[in-house]
Amino acid sequence: MKQVYKITDPTGKIYIGKDRVGTYRCFGSPDIETVNADFMSLPEQQRSDYTVRKQTLWESDTASEEELSAMEIKCIREHKSNDPKIGYNRFPSYKAAQE
Image (tube, one colour):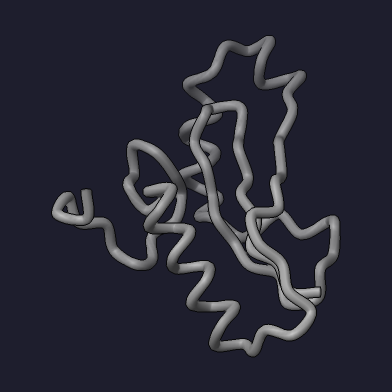
C-alpha cells in the first residue's frame, strides 16, 4: 500500500512524506538539525513529553512510483509544508507566488 502522509510535530510544523510499502513506523526524513533547533524553542517540559501525529492523506494499492511522487508534491504544495514557517519539506522549493 503506497501512502502519502503528514507528520505534525509538537512545534506545530508539518512534514509531508511518502511511503512505498505502507509501514506504520515511517515518519519521514526532514532535516534533523532544523527539527532539533525548533524543538529547542519549546519549553523543557514539552520537550520531555510530547506527541507526534501521523495522518494518512492518500493511499493506493495500484499507483505507480510516478503517481506516488506526484501526489506527494501535490500534498506538499496544498499544505505549504515547503514554507519554512509552516513545515520541514525543502522540495519543491517554496515560492510565495504559490499562494
